[in-house]
Image (cartoon, rainbow over all chains, first blue to last red; front, side):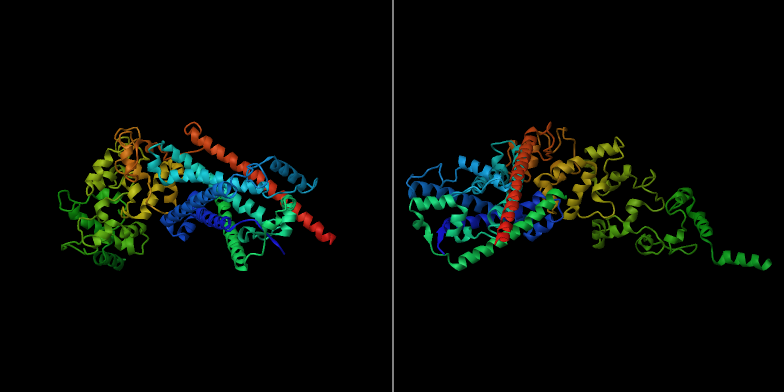
Length: 271
Length: 322
């Protein structure tokens, strides 16, 4: 079966860096947020104590800033050098939301209620774009507030001390939003929904099957056929060990995420 | 009858009853001016008033007696089988006061140093040497510098000048019998809760900050109540000499944050995001975040559940059709 290139090695490596650092940040941050939960001291000890957890948190923060910068650099490189500025910011290959996304949301809900057909998607669906931009918002909000809390004496020179109280609320609630979203909605949308269950390996293998392209992204398929570009994207299957290792990694991350989610729900509602 | 009387007299002579023995002790020690004078009526009203002298002074058996050794309270209060309270002595055995006694510092306090000997009353009794009004002066016998600082603190003034029954004495923090070493982590963390027994709102809001959360998890390296407010020297916030007054607060923050600047000190160490009047920016930030979270989760959970329902239904229909 022919396969279609979707993510290159750079994308896939950044996604793994993102998944690992995100789990590290959540696990080392939540004992503080839910310090009164009975599991908090246990999790803190598991991570090596308060000092070690703080170190893990900061190392993962640096990885986060790293993949974020690496991605921005890639986007600039891709648009300026590879595409030589021949790129439609508003178009099917762009992450920028357009009117069709709103129409797709509307038609998706019609499909959910059984009063219309499933909308036809192109290269990026609206929920994929939401996930993508949510990272910008999240890294921005959590990253900036986190830097304030990391270097309070430095930032205290430019802003009043109560900015750290504001930063604490933003950091903590935004982290809850991010963890709650990733461990439920992102997991379901990409991996756990019946069409992909139990895991969509595309982010690890980088490849879609031709059938998946025709079925999940018919507009893109049609576009590639019409423009005679499908050949460019055809490729052989990924090396088995890469896909297998990816799936194993994916399962581990999903399971750890679910475990942390249970603790978060307990911390949020029980104590 | 004659025989019975004889037996009675004989028993009085051979086995003196406690009351009789006590009375005979008072023959000498009940006389004012006598060395080791004991005020009979004051003793009899004390916690041990029902006991015979020889219960404690068991090395005395008659008159004249030789040198009397120091009473060992532990004979009843540490071992003993007669139901005397033992918890206090057990705690004392673990305390710094006793630990240093064990290495031979004769200046360290034993039971009698604080409780006295013959006139031991329940601490609620004003005659008791451990009555709360007298506690700071009692400890000052060995800790005079701490007493000088404490008596000018808000707690000291409340206790010694205003007779406030809720004001903490030395004991509330240092735990009279257990007196743990002040370097003990467990004690420093327990103290936070102790402060919160009276200052409950402050404890609640402290627990919302980084400082309060780290200490709640059992680590002492961040600011605890006394690190900012002081301990023996604690004063009202509006007192210019308070560690947190305009004049002193920067120095206090700099104990842990050496590069802190005046702006840094505007941190709310007791933030309450639900108090709109006092912390408006914090309140509206919290409100915005709450709406953002509820809105995002509400939309996407609805989306996800409907999607799951539709997908499952379509797949079941397909299977049914095959």
